[in-house]
Amino acid sequence: MPKSNTEIINIDPNLITKEASNSLHWTNAKELTIQGKGWDNQENYYYRFPQKAKNIVRPPVWKLSTQSAGIAIHFRTNSTSINVKWKTHEEWNLLNLTAYTSRGLDLYVKILNRWKWVASTCGEKADEYEKEILSGIDSKEREYKLYLPLYGGITNLEIGIEKNKTLISAKKDNQPPIVFYGTSILQGASASRPGMAYPSIIERFLNRESINLGFSGNAWLDLEVADLLCELNPALYVIDCLPNVTAAVIEEKLILFIEKLRKQHPFVPILLVESTTYTNAHLVSDRQKRYESSNEALNNAYEKLQEAGYERIYYQVDQQLNGDDGEGTIDGTHLTDLGFMRMAKKIGEKIKLILAREDV
Image (tube, rainbow, N blue to C red; front, side, top):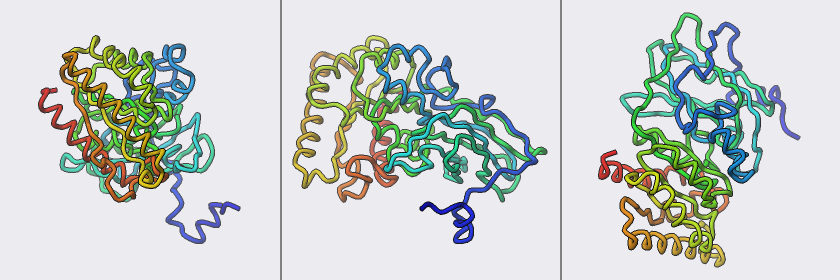
């Protein structure tokens, strides 16, 4: 039987998140800078797709788009404590997801032009929470980024500070963002907390906004999704749809998907990413065959695009994106923080080279 909070406090009080103070000034996060959101006309401010997509994409894709993966609130404050009040509309309590992933918030601070983790918080199973996420710091004004849940959605978010302190929007990044489209791995399964999805790690590494359009189990190269992606104006598209699609689906849809993006954005580079190795494929032959066939089909499509004269199409080979020791996943497929850091490092370096070469 699960332990109550009272029982846990008696054992180890450090395991309990702190409740917010009653004497705070609260600001609705809608008044602050938001990152990772591609469209403004959502039914809910924190949805990832515009409202019209509800009648365009498959129902599972729409449902997943209501989850706030990759979205972050960017602000500055000199408060000695930071508090958060948020309401969820959905939580995914899967065995390979943490509570922080589905209903938690993740806070980073910028120090010497480098983003560093500073605090996280999470609520017990409910739909509305009010927590102190950070305290005990001095009153120097600092820049913060607060990541929202990866596998849950929220309907309201407020940030609370001391009444005699200031809270303002951080400067909006005017550089075009990197748009990522892909699977549950890209959405963030199985990171320990929201800031550890690999597009968010790359975002902090490059100081470049990312838009996370990962759709768990549903990155099927739907052409309706391609049409929606065409509405954005990115510096780069990253297409990371394996292993949600078989070789047959890649052969049928990949080139059509790329053609749509290229027609609308003739000069925007596109990066195709191979599947990472299933970490138990060395024993499970069917998984090894699936890994090899999908990557072979992706490479064949890439070569056809080159032969057809398509430019600015880049390719990321696996090359042990997740390492060679088998320690980077929770279940052979979905990445732990270790796996995400490894993947972000290699793909992030590739993206950095592409952005420099294309001067975007």
